[in-house]
Image (cartoon, rainbow over all chains, first blue to last red; front, side, top):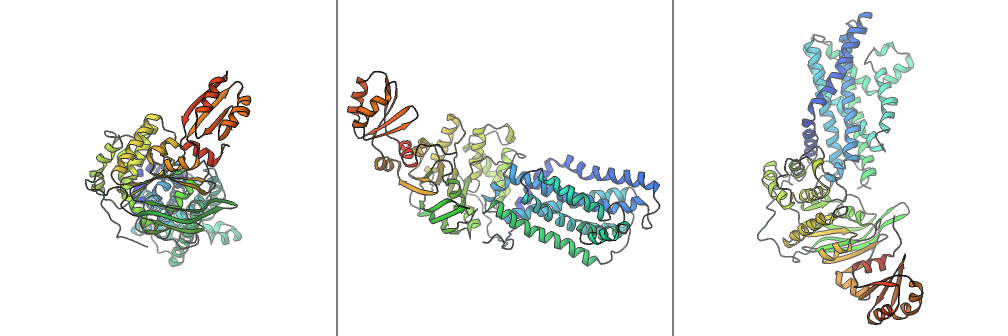
Amino acid sequence: MSVYALPRVSIRFVPVWRRNFLVWTKLAAPSVLFNLADPTIYMLGLGYGLGTFLPDVGGVPYIAFLAAGTICFSTMNTATFETLYSAFSRMHVQRTWDAITNAPVALDDIVLAELIWAASKSVLSGLAILVVVYALGIVASPLAAATLAIVPLIGLCFGGLGLVITALSPSYDFFSYYFTLIITPMAMLSGVFFPVDQLPQALRIVAEVLPLAHATELVRPLTLGAIPEHAVLHVAVLLAYGTAGFYAATILFRRRLAS
Amino acid sequence: MADLSEQCVAPSLVSEDGPARGNEGVVLRAANLRKRYGELEVVARASFAIHGGECFGLLGPNGAGKTTTLRLCLGLIAPDSGAIELMREPVPSRARIARRTVGVVPQMDNLDPDFTVAENLLVFGRYFGITDASSRARIPELLEFAGLAGRASSRIQTLSGGMRRRLMLARALVNDPELLFMDEPTTGLDPQARHVIWDRLKQLLARGKTILLTTHFMEEAERLCDRIAIMDRGRFIAEGTPRELIERHIEPHVIEVHGDGLEAWANGDGVHLASRLERSGETIFCYAADAALLLASLERTNGLRYLHRPADLEDVFLKLTGRELRD
């Protein structure tokens, strides 16, 4: 089989997902804290603190604007951390992947399991924040619940991209480049903290190709009780990034581990 | 693609009517295997066959290509050329299917540090499609076999090196494999732990299991293996039973000599009376068909110390692969 062959996956990815889930149940308390408390503090601090100095943003209070950004940002972060640090630990440090490939599970199955697992954790993260913003009355529209359909796509998108970085990474240190050069600038350009139309023209064009920008274009209208425009396009972009990332990661992991 | 036909329930470890040794045909066959990384040919035209019920030892210095050969046979990497058949399935094309009835104990500890002993076995069983109920029923037996009874709830961090290795062995048995791959199973273990592993492997052989073992401990190979292949620089350079290899490649007597006046003795009687001399640091190894004259000469020479012993596999190994260090 060529390293460029399309991913060949089987139902055997399920026990690998379950393995990660079982580890998570043992560490759930700190994990939920990390996934929920951190973004909530930022959202409330910025939203209520900074928000008092701001006029309405896009016709809504700043904190209501920021809710959608926080959902997207923390969903992205969850999938990214999981596929970078956690997957790298399993692959490189603990050699868990080596153990699994000695069983009738293929490397492609493991990569798929990591992707689905990262997306699963993202859903948890998105759900937790959604519960908080509902409970605090920051978001009121029942349409906001539909973001739960978008959150897994964001997870798959950034999970796929994160796996590419992990496949290329010689050590944990490498991940700092990804955060500093890709993730952080993307957060600034994607309408998480302020509307994209505040940006200069050139950066607005850049924003059009950023997956996080498409995520906020989907989630923000929903949290404010509206149907997103060009929803099909935005969904397609997220899926395209996720699929391309998964395929590229599969190729890179095969080259790294199975050649 | 999705393959749901792989569900299997592990039968009992102790099968009363298991197959007798040596009657099962070939469980692993490799023909003309080649694998190169850049300019380095790691495996060069390797051919061998392993029969059901036997213990086959793959010996070689560090970097000889032993682990790469195992990884090729398991279908984890693809050969540049050559053919592999594992458990009657072509590899790597159907390696995943073939691995259903294979167990692997890798060189490096890769137990799941977040799980208990029992969870390690349970989770590993799932990779084979073994139901949790079936695994739970079997875990006590596996732990008993591995000398880990009462340790089911222990965390991995609390286990000694020997216990971890035994747990790795138990993990490799969750699917009741026909064939076990063991990559240097006793490296880094103390003598007690090593003897326990040897004992367990003998028990498994007695139950009709087949074992492919890599090692660089000759004593281990001599004790366990029915057949041995010596590998060096990617090539299989000798193959046979331990006894055959010794008879074929080496004189039956070895006298190790060191002490004052070594040079003078070696250049005189040594070179005349031994059929072959090998030097390693301050010691000279004299190989001979008959030791009597050498021993008499050494007895007459003051200042020399010597040890007379029968030739063993290590002598064969060092003769064939040389005495220089492999780092």
